[in-house]
Amino acid sequence: MRTQLDILALEPFYGGVRRAMLGAVARCSRHRWTLLKLPPRRMERRLAAAANWFAEQLDRHVSGHIDVLFTSDALNLANLYRLMPDLAMRPSVVYFHENHLPAVNAREGGPFELVNLNTATAASEIWFNSTYHLKSFLTRGAALVARHPELASRDPMPAIVSKAQLVYPPTDLGYVAGVQAAHPQRVRQPDMIFVETRDADVKLLNWGLEIVHGAGRKFNLITVGPVKQLSNEWPRTTIREVDEPGQVLGMLESSILISVKPKATSDYLCMRGMMAGCRPIVPDAGVYPELIPDTLHASCLYKTGPSDLALKIMEALTAGGWPTMPPDWRKAFRPFDAISACKVIDERLENLADARSGAA
Image 1 (cartoon, helix red, strand yellow):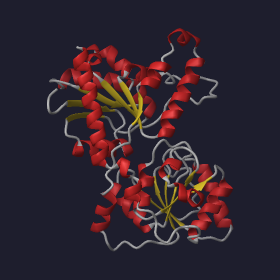
Image 2: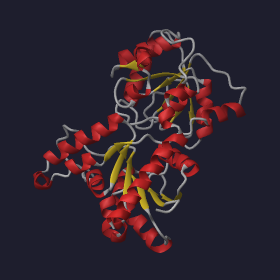
Image 3: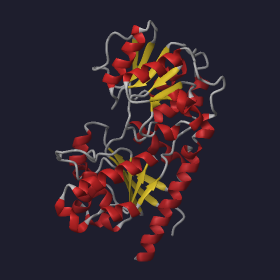
């Protein structure tokens, strides 16, 4: 095997954590990465048509050797292989940032319910960003197969299980410190709350804040994401989703970070908020029990419901139950550190390339 591999990365939804991860990989990987991307708009359109767009671009503009294909859950890999069968000869990795399989108890199927299952079947390996996500995907996949009798004779789940792995997304853990060093004058406000509304249960947020407001507690919000459903009663400042330095500055001014995403598979903004010094108030479901140390579960995790959310917010506004010295989050998040996480990715890609070369 050559000293460096040539990795072709296709990202149909280049924004948020996907953009942050690929940026960290480009800086820290020892291999050569070629990235083709589309902006982060309308996930359903990406699942339906991204393979066609990338196939056309690859046919027109990309030539040269490819050792490994690297893409994400936003691409229909099986469709890409049908359009470009030569790519199917290369080992491939699909990184699942999200899960687009229907819920286990879903009664009606949608037009894209089989896309992730087909992609997982076509890939050489599938990587997940959290233990919760990996288990959730396999559970949903098994339920989906059970609802489709035509798949019973060729159940793809055993093969999918055998190539599913937990691989933490590389994260620049020094980013917050860099922004803070450039803006040392930022002052933390005790009543300031940072919250991301993208893919969030905004109804739950409104309900919880209504209880806090009814108890006579004052607060201000710094939001990232859509605010159409957010109540206008709450004073707020909104930061654009592409303004990453502005988001960190908002975190440095906030004392509390709230998540209302009970089924989150990962949350890099929450990690940044904790490194910025915010107290997290997050669901006791999804990825959050994995991100928060066990000793802080009682003070940071709330049960799904407005009453417990409001109680945790009011405790946080008085700093109740919060240690004088918060944890060393960089130590807690060491598995996500870009250098060490990229080393794991590089080694795994090398093993894949070696295995395909040996089989050839």
